[in-house]
Image 1: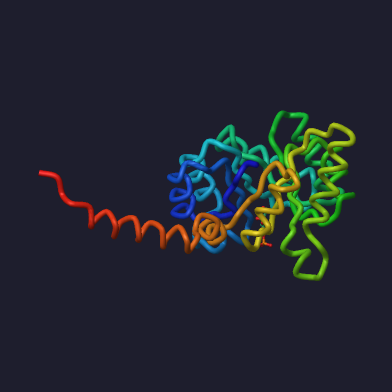
Image 2: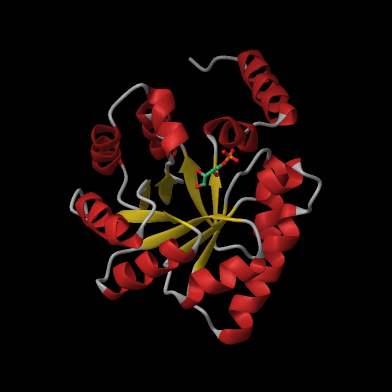
Length: 216
Ligand code: E4P
């Protein structure tokens, strides 16, 4: 499974890039707003850090405006992936952008039917939001499993990005059911690499090493 970071914070992105495990980045307007920086400036800097797909979201609401907005973002770097919100206008925009060879990520997806339509429009990626469904007492991960099954039934090439990840078990579940990608916040990535027994083990090995007689 590919691991993306769900962040617009370049310090976080640089840090995880240095771990050698990062396959891509997803941003959204909320994440960019948290940085206090300009949208294009942030996306341009991320493109200097990461080679994999970098999702940047359009904010236009009509496909006729989404397409030129997307084209301007796509000019930043060849790995920019245009995040387009699910809906009639979004589907039209994805169809046009995929025809132009621009990578797309259909976002704000909350049902397998929406995911099916995104794939039929030619989206490179689809982002079903598991955490926000869990928040309203729906099993978000069931939507992922259903979407994967549907895509497999018909050989649809769209890759499923498990989005709105809230905790490490979301990542485990995503990997167990064969999701193509999980986009994971920095805090959850740090939780994934930590284990108290690892820390105890490192400390014990270090202490025991000190007991080994020094060789002359
Ligand atoms: C997906 O690409 C979105 O950026 C993100 O996962 C949304 O997650 P949230 O529900 O934590 O805002």
